[in-house]
Amino acid sequence: MKKLILTFTVSLFMLIILTSSCRLDGDAPLPAGFKSASYMVGSTAVTVTSSYDGIFVNNSITANSVILIGKDGSQITFQFDGTTAGFYPLTAYPDAVYKSPSSKLYNSVSGSLNITSYKVDGATNTFSATFSFVAASVTNPLDTIVINNGVITNCSNSL
Image (cartoon, rainbow, N blue to C red):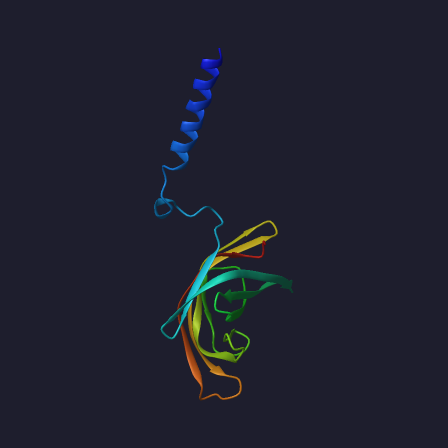
C-alpha cells in the first residue's frame, strides 16, 4: 500500500512539473484584460508601468482622463470625451500633456489619439489605442518634443 501511495505521489508530482513547464512565455497569449502601454520620446523607448482611465459623466457625456506613468518617471495624460472608437485630436491643453522625468511640462500642439476599441461593461470602461503627438514646453514654445509609436492596450478605470 505504501508503495502504491508513493508511486501515485511521485506520478502526480511529475505531472505537475511537466505540465507547468510546457509553455514558454513568448508562446503564451496575453491573458484577457492584460494592461500594457509604451511610447517613444524622440528615439527613446518608454515602457509604461501604470495606466488608468479616470472617467466621469457630465450631461450624459463620458469624459476620460487617462494617465500613463513611464518606467523612466515620465508621465502622459490624455483628456477625451466619448466611448466610441475613432480619432481624437491632440492639438492643445488639456488634450495631451507630457511630463518629462525631470518634471518639465509639455502641452500637445498637434497629433491624435486613435481609439481602436472602447468597451463599457457595467461600471468598467476599457479601451485600446495608438497615439502620436508633438508637444511644446509650457515655458518655451520653441522647445518641442515628439511622442510617437504610442500603444495602449486594455487601459481601464478598474485597478
